Length: 204
Image (tube, rainbow, N blue to C red; front, side):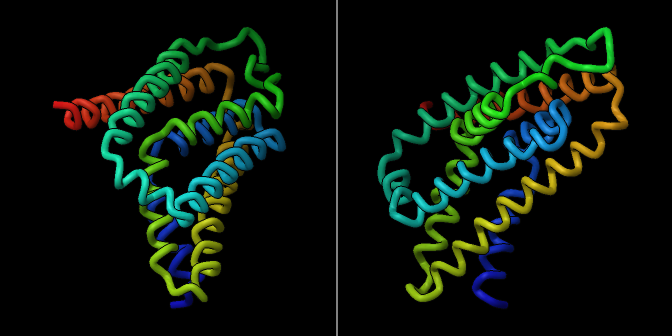
């Protein structure tokens, strides 16, 4: 297998499994549709790119070497996902065929997605520690190709999610979108509880 292919597969293995970041990209894409969903793709992709490059540059060693950072990340992530989950659970169906989220600006969509990406401890640990360390472990002449593979995995996956969710959007009535929001909220709350449990285990 090529170096690029190895990086691509490792990136997909870490990014594809359902997580808060994926749920949020799907939810935003359903809410605003194309082309504004591309703002969510760009935000998630840029955040992953920054985290992966930071990991390869040595930030992963800092996270590993300073154990006290992990509980801080877990607690911040749990609280943020709790907020997002509760807000999604309070979603209501509009009276017409539009939703309040359809008027969201590109900046708002990008900012919300970036917040989930950067305040998600699992995403940080996966991209900075795992992918960053994997890139750093490659031979000097192969690192660029391997890193390009991991970054490609991130961008392609988020683009595929946004396209699929935006396509499904046309088949969703306002009432169904409300239930998508609520289901997303429940999933985010599950992730918040999982992070809270991890946090408890790290401090007890």
